Amino acid sequence: MIRVRSRSRRAGYTLLETVAAVAVFMVVWYSLGMAMRMGSESQRLVSRGAEENRDLRESIGLLTDELRSSTDSSIAIATLADGNHSLTFMVPIDVAGVADWGVYDKSLGPLPADRNRADWQLRYTVADVDVGGGVIEKQLVREILDDLGAVQKQTTLARGLRAGGGAQSGLRVVQVGAVWELTLTTTGAHGVSQGENEVFHVRTRNDD
Image (cartoon, rainbow, N blue to C red; front, side, top):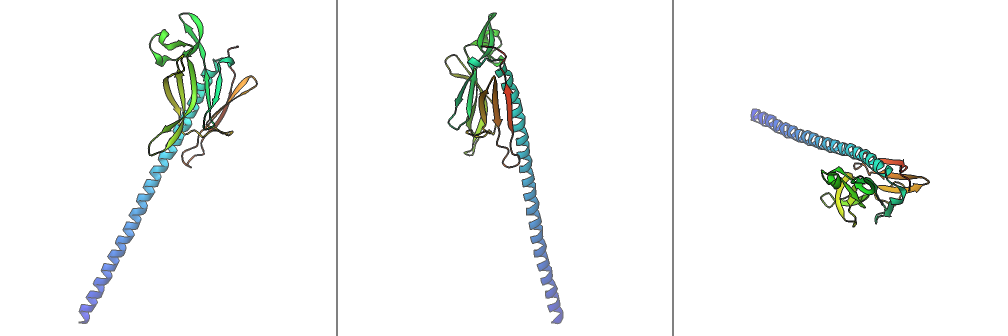
């Protein structure tokens, strides 16, 4: 009888040890899984932040080049419902050898007549875009408007812009003397980065 009880006791200890080992294994496995998921999410957000910053700088380069070639008299600023600004202007073009104002864009067609459109306008503005899951994201877009004001082409340049109404608006444009001061600000990737705030100044090359 004593030996039987001893074997039962040892068997009981073995069962408890097995249960404990399984429990520890499950905790470790769960912790590793959570760590991997968090690491993957962090990497995704960091990559998105880097992409947003790169897009913002490229947008600044394009906007600066086009606005610099414009003239002050063709530049118009409008305030959007969210407080951001919309910037509309024309650039110099060549229509059958005659200098004019409008839009030049290679994507409009293969021929010079397609690419040079008199009285058309460029517009840089902030659009509210549904990116899925009920999430509305503010994006900087470049629009080509025809001579009737209809949008003929729209290109997204940067994502994650801030709402307007403050010094760090997503897009803010003010004239300071002879130069135009433009501010572009992003929100950042959900706490991983604080976003970017870029302020730059442009003087138009063409006199009124």
